[in-house]
Length: 85
Image 1 (cartoon, one colour):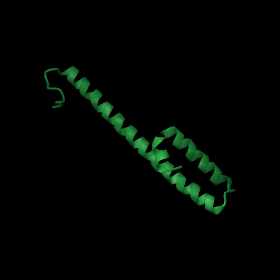
Image 2: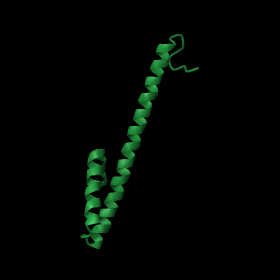
Image 3: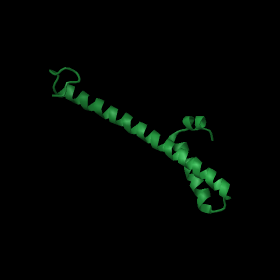
Image 4: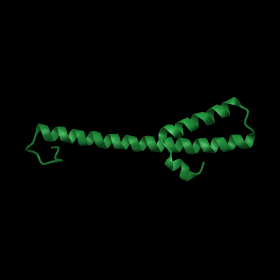
């Protein structure tokens, strides 16, 4: 799978592909060259999963920050929007 193809897959697809690779490697039936290629593909998929999880975590943090600000603005409407102190 090329790097461009990796950019288009979802976290769930990447994780499923990674699980398939791990299973093939654990079966112990891959020739050495195929094993190395599978390992390299697994590293790419692991990085992709980590990146997608980080992006999701950042989105959640942003949304929570936004929600907290809405609550602060609701509790104390005398403050300017975005003012926390």
